[in-house]
Image 1 (spheres, rainbow, N blue to C red):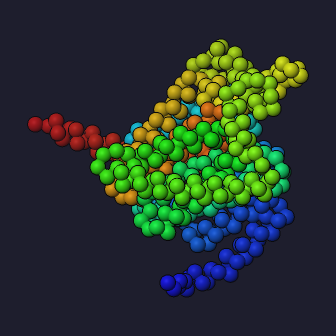
Image 2 (tube, rainbow, N blue to C red; image 1 turned 180 degrees about the horizontal axis):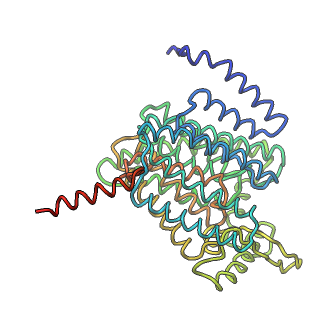
Image 3 (tube, rainbow, N blue to C red; image 1 turned 120 degrees about the vertical axis):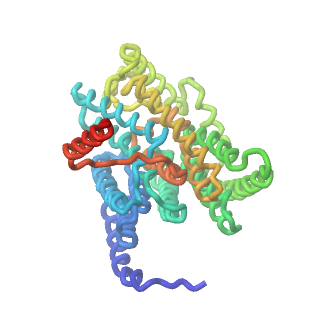
Length: 479
């Protein structure tokens, strides 16, 4: 096969080389992820400057590298905000060309309802005098859900969605590299930017697209990606990630294969892909274990997983005790105001019984409890309704005869299930790293289902229109 570049692409090669060089310099002298992100964004600007799908995927990729624990989250979010604003420009252009229309339907209503209540709770937090910084961090994550509607309104084909898939997979591989580098640099298990839920979500995406790939080479490639993403989640030693995958992977597999006519053939494809992925995963884990000196890796994993449900005072269960203290402080507040909550930005003051120290934290290691505390039962109910509608919309679209459209919907449903389980032990809803990607998957799934649309009409001459309407009424009433 001969690869031929267009004259236009050849003319852009010097600019691309300059961008790569600038990104390398930025990565070496400032921060690696910032260099990668700038290279990706600049490449998208050069090759596809006003393509909404690529812009949205670049936004999700950039948001996934925000380091919430590195002390520079304000700087990171400032850069991501620029990318988010850039993503709005191609959507505005698509709107003018008739390629974007405001989506309607249950999922759109659920998104708007949750965002509206978040706005109310944001105003309550501001009026209560809470920290503007904490309010901004929380609203930045929750507000990014609006991109589900921006992506869902695009009038695009599944072929036009492929660049987004490439961008997301590259971002996922970047996180796999970060996870491996974490042990090389720190020599111990860490959290933060080194281990985020994104590779777990993309593992589900790889399973959905791999099971529907047409060629053997494509299926093998997706299996290898699935193995790499599972490697990242395995060596994270995060029990929440493990539980999420234990639920999401079987759920996605059943959604792909199902029951009824042809089910056994579909199950064979899913099992074949899973077998290749697990075999590659075992090999990768063994290589990692040998290089890191983990001589008792099965015991490490078993001990870590078993400690999920223990409250004994040990090193492996210390995080469980910390969570119980958070939950107790949260319920004491919720008991006094369970319906409306306290508004965005509330800070909990938690006294540690062992050392007598008091910590101030705006987060809780349980998303649904965090949301109940900040937005009350109303906000919690609206968010749960949003999850239900997102999964229902994706499951309905998974029945599409279009293989790629079905894969997008299956990936969206599986990733939503995964993150819903992970959020039982974390607060990733309050961070943009995974929330933006989840919203983007919802939007692409919504777009492929061809939803109904609201007709947005701007009446520039209301007085004249009113006069015409009255004249028509009089004419119809005249005998």
